[in-house]
Image 1 (cartoon, rainbow, N blue to C red):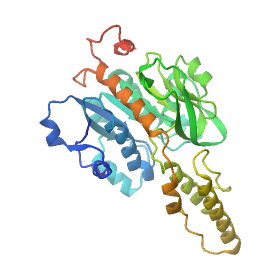
Image 2: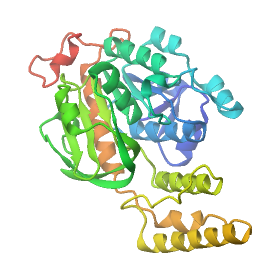
Image 3: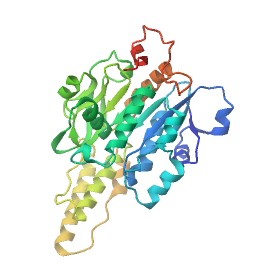
Length: 358
């Protein structure tokens, strides 16, 4: 069902141009279709801010539940932003105070730039405040990557583990528990992109009383849920990524090398570039090294030669999981989003316990 363009946020126009169904708020108000209001706590850095909006909005909008989706992006003031991104947030984002007053049916919390110690990051305390509020007032919260690591640390006392090398690429995963409604109808084996320096291991999720649904032998746990089955949904991977997202990250890492921020040239994301793309990028690396040796201008990154060769092998499964998540929120949420938990849920529903405040 459609996304509702409830503000002038540019991402709505961009998604409409891409062929997504986005309707004007005036039109939505004249349709007798139930609304679902979904928050997006967007903690991504400036260059990824709008792309993250579109990625999560797209997944929500492609859900096939009978509802109109109102998206409510907000962020944390403690995250430093440059002028352009600050103006974008000022014009189009809500404050957390507004979010609390209006209520949400569901909440997505994005990842963020990593730091060596989560509790020392400037947004740590405000993030905990949002998560604590959501646990009592929102039917389900979906945490992505660093947000998953944060909630595991402050709520379950499980600190993430620093990896010996950055884990990034596209990895095959297997559904561990096919009976859970979140993975109903999802392929038993599917791809998910990852990009991170830290990890929560399977043993940590299990020791915290959480339930692992999707795992990879190479990349570790991707999807886990809280003991009640839905109140908190945790991703370690990035199923929201576009086909070019890892290319953009690789290009950024190359630019960091060129600027002297990184001392080593970045390796390829695993299982992502075709052999032809790798050959093109290897040749580019050789030209970069020669330019540095001889003090010549750096060559232009060959992005246009790579983009069309990239495949997205994860979006359908990501869409299926999000579709199931939205469907469960729809079933279990009170029509009045200020009263998030329904009191008429069939006690035989597999996730009926979500309506019991813990």
